[in-house]
Length: 129
Image: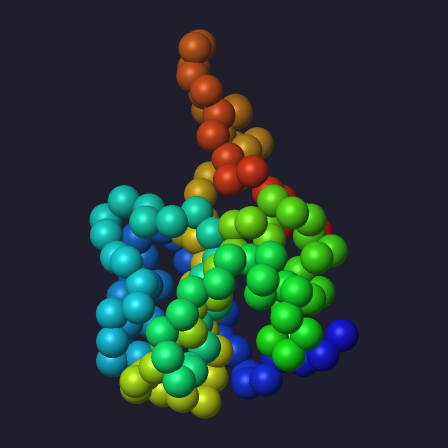
């Protein structure tokens, strides 16, 4: 497998902790949506480029030049919760930023604290790999 063309920074934290706001600040451009409630449920890989373009996870993983083909080992659920954003005119052009979905309570903790009639929600993919 090929490595990523640039070093990357992976942002991990609770939902609404400022990950996307930090990205927008560093890039000096609004690339990610922000809000108090969770704004997405997937991973966004942001790279500098000559034009603005978005690609779905399968295209990203299938591109050998991007260096993310190793994500295949995590299965289609993760791949379909991943997207690539190529952006021009960024404040920083020598790194890749990866915005993660906000962390939520683990299913075990959630199940233990659930009352009758409550439904457990999860993202549909594991981080275990």
